[in-house]
Length: 565
Image (cartoon, one colour):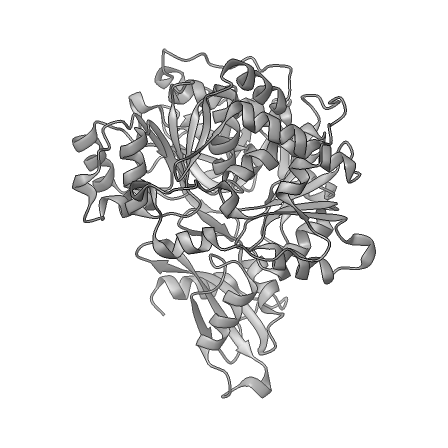
């Protein structure tokens, strides 16, 4: 048995909150049914002034679910959703659930070389995407054997969600507006979004329950390609219900959804929690500080989950003093530490305490959070509803005393079921303490005497670029496809704005030496992988340092980088 108190944070727990939540024995789709009955004419989202009501979201999701089933989609089938933040994302997400299928969200920055992995690994049968991204899907699909390809592609034009007339106060920058308005041709054989909605297919009775698989978001690790995290309706519901309580949100809440919806955090607060609450989401497909300031002012946004760099950027706007941010009541986020000076300005000028949190794709976003009543800076917070989190010694796997550094392990209702098709990786991800199954997070940290957790280092190789997790092993695998690269080792380099950026130490093939520049490798990478993964810095080397066993000594290169050379 453990001799360390698992709940030293009890004294810090807000008196307004229960210590655990009773989860409904229903599905995420049922949340939409309830809100559509309660608030049929209420706006579920606003997109540059165009409103989508709960009634219309429900109608479109039902129609699209019927179309999916007409394409042969069955219970448990995987459907890729490859979209930027837009109203169609909400429709697609709930349509897949209504069809008894599983949503596989994919980062819209991914290129064809990356996208093919999601089709093949998930065994996906349909992809829902926008016309500007459809060529990536087509190219990725064509690279696969015929028996692993998609059966159908559903394509929307982003312009379909725009208002007929655009209010200048809600207008995005000219380049973004041109991108949104451009209508691209559909790939051969694809179905147009409007045609699917108009097809008149009604879905059959829903058969999924709370323990059925609902979501398969992908996350990478220390080795190999991204792995699918299996989340049921129930594991997601834990943070859907708990998130509203923690942030004091309700049907009157207006939130800003600019964190990408493919990301577990953006999905949780922009797609799932909002529909459960019956609240309204102001949707932004891309970050722009001027537009964000205007939208917060115009729509009286009350809640905003973001990454700290967004707030820093907003404060850096020359128009900041003109924005009316007085409606903001709750600011939260994670992915990067909030600088003390910015946090103090938020408190001084707006009376808002930034509530940092911590979680993983495996925990459906937060497992820890700072209560606004007693928040600590550069802190992960305390374990949230029903969560038991400990710190263990890396060698003995026994719990360590408060203040000592070890690996953070977590048990809770939002922890995923395992990695899709990878039983060995699933087994390695968990351990048992006091008869309970704990997720090994791979993050090194400590717990103070009040039960607050702090991260100190990463056990896994991971680069944190403005909240985006970049796994060096995945970038290395993609770089090996470059015709000039013989070997590559990816490390983190300091970035004044992003915190960290990606650097690749590259050994060129003999025939490329003296013929290829570092910038050419950078340009190749940007063309073949998501921009946040692509190395911003490339350095050539004659050889990579290796251990006696022949493994590349990436830590040596990382330490040299940290030491300035």
